[in-house]
Length: 281
Image: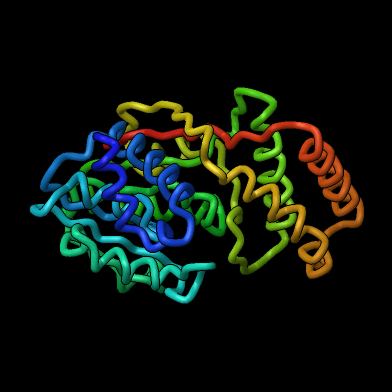
């Protein structure tokens, strides 16, 4: 894909009007994922956890005018800042690829009301949203439910196996969040359940999928690692104050980990984790 074509996709996104360079980096990363999955023109695609549409825009470009991307997200259209999910979707739907996109918010994929016929979709996409699930068992239930709906499963999530010390702060921020999130019944955090690549492989295979190929994708310019670190450093004390059932010893451990994160943040460069991705049938 040419630089001009990439910039055209970036322009489909409302966030490009707020922070163009950030959106350009996000779009280039999604292109790497879709290239690896081998999405074909004219495909019907179900995207679970479509969010603001970063991956949706790329999928719609690849599937073209004869295809369809149906995005589903449990989030409310009012969620998100500085641009909400709803605002981003509205902007995307008015773009050149909008006619081949459908988006449903406030939609729980596990609801009994949500169902599709066997092989309704050529691809089911689950990108950067597995950590949003409430539990490992919920992720398994999702993978089981969608098994008959699509011919192929496209997956991507941060890889917990670090390649360099620069990725360590991102991983540590994730681990800190996962520890206090384990004591919550409800959450809107970015990390609600931490699953590793090994966990995911076990889950999808138990659900009846067979992984055909997998890879690790590096996008070192992504800002997500920095965002997660900043979130932990800004929110952790308030988060811990709101959890009444967390053991004192674990709370002290988390605060020590936060100090480690602060120290690394002061003296070292940060890079995002790599991304683990696979295609399954």
